[in-house]
Image 1 (spheres, rainbow, N blue to C red):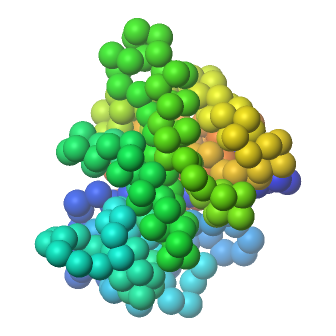
Image 2 (image 1 turned 90 degrees about the horizontal axis):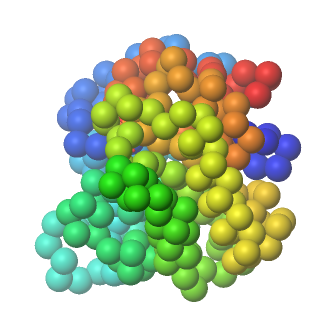
Length: 258
Ligand code: PEP
């Protein structure tokens, strides 16, 4: 990471875990042990029905609550969907877009791009996920694949908007598998993501954009991953469900030695 130029962000992705009551219990426990003083940005992206409980519990704190998806349209006949302005009104600050589990369910690069636009237009901070499958890594096309995903996700984004985007590199083979990318593997792709942003938006913006790593990050491997120069934080699934583990990852990000 490089605290001089960009924000360090530790974001939890609860996926489809925890009820509103369990959310309340988690937040009580989390608040009691969360690091005090100056520290990195922290986000918790919870299931949609848990947003009110999470927002209420975190009102007086610096933890930002986020959603895990939004619809690209403003309103209308989209049964079961949630628009970006609804998330804002419910108190969300962040929204995960293009998670590989949603892409596996049919979300395309064009959908991701439309959602990024909708999120930004409504004032949400999009956490845009990109990453390759194991087959793609083994065929040696990781760089090309991730470059395409980034270019597509950021298509039509203005210079004033790009500053509010967070990118998360999440190799699919490392998500929920316990198989973490090595710090060197993760750094290589995150550095390339910054290069792509540099080519699209210039050096100043590339230097300022936060690029996270996600994929079985936990309290044991977080420090080494976060010590890489182009990894500015983490998107954390499983380990964000347990307050003690999530706090340890935040503490790793706060170490003055990185
Ligand atoms: C994720 O869901 O984005 C993720 C990285 O999950 P996990 O940490 O469990 O691999």
